[in-house]
Amino acid sequence: MIPRYSRPEMTAVWSPATRFRIWFEIEAHACDALAEIGVIPKESARAIWEKAGHVEFDVARIDEIERVTKHDVIAFLTHLAEFIGPDSRFVHQGLTSSDVLDTCLAVQLQRASDLLIADVDALLAALKRRAFEHKMTPTIGRSHAIHAEPTTFGLKLAGAYAEFVRARARLAAAREEISTCAISGAVGTFANVDPRVEAHVAEKLGLKPEPISTQVIPRDRHAAFFAALGIVASSVERLAIEIRHLQRSEVLEAEEYFSEGQKGSSAMPHKRNPVLTENLTGLARLVRSAVTPALENVALWHERDISHSSVERGIAPDATITLDFALARLAGVIDKLVVYPENMRKNLDRLGGLVHSQRVLLALTQKGVSREDAYGFVQRNAMPVWRGQGDFLTLLKADKEVRAALSEGELEELFDLGYHFKAVDAIFGRVFGEG
Image 1: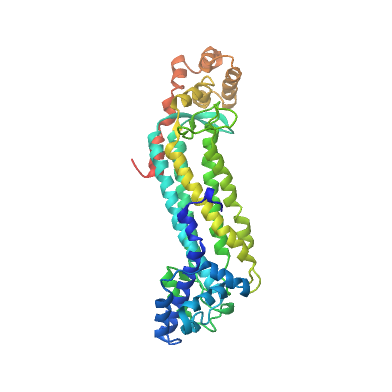
Image 2: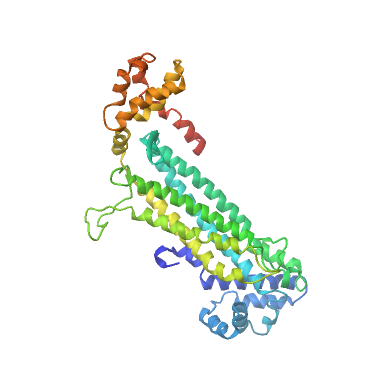
């Protein structure tokens, strides 16, 4: 992923230096276990840690060796031997490359998951603060992008909060699913490495032994991981699109913070564009683009092939780095979001009271009018208002059939905005577990 959409902590998870350090730890922990069960000398296992445990591996040197060997793990092991010396013959005893690569990927995905979960926590904090700030700020609810009935801006944000609580749970479940270790040797039979070695390495790295690995960890686990990332990215996009719609000039109920000195257009000095949320929409597409390749990686040939490898070298860093950046950006957007309650109220009123049509419909049915007739009474008074030809309440008061069922006072009572917000506290209690 390009630096423009990267943050250093997540990028570091995928750096060559990090990868080679994890490879070393896998090999060294395996040597400890091999020494413990008497396969290699204990002094050799200690020497491996002492001679290479604190060195900084030379990435350029490993790349140089790989240009000859055409094999990344062998290149690393060759470089490692340059530090360790004769005891290096005990490194990688009974292991195959996939043991190192797959176990390393599990560690990296774990670390990436932890950063993503922390990102969601920061976003949740911003959403909660702003939701309570606007808990009772009236705004129009829209269905099909058309004015429907009143809601509150706090409820909009509470809905996003609940969605990202689910996103957090998905990330935690995805982390759990990919947290497995495979140290089972060629074709996964443990023929040349004792299962106790795998158990030891797994414990040291905070993983679980894969119940059965064919030489690779089954890729359905990874498919589930990237699918979870794709769903979280879609939640990012949904909230970003909501903000983009609210920032439209003819709506302007909320907008991204526009800093001092910021410029929106090279040609039009007046522009204040929703550039951050537009960017988030694009980033969400990038994250989701990893899902299909991850699904296709599940179907490997026999006990292993490497058709998944090139895919994962791309999608693992790209998807996690991109989602990390997107979540942090979205948290910042919500934290600084500029909200315009006056415009929300203006938009609420722009249809001349039509947002109360359902209350009138229901009141008529409760007075004994059939639903079909009640719907017709309400709609024939609503349509002129829709065309800008009058006020809904005034027209209803002048309608003889409506007035036969409802008095002026009863009609006026049906236009009480507060009626729509009587369950807000209960909904907040469900979402936030408070009050």
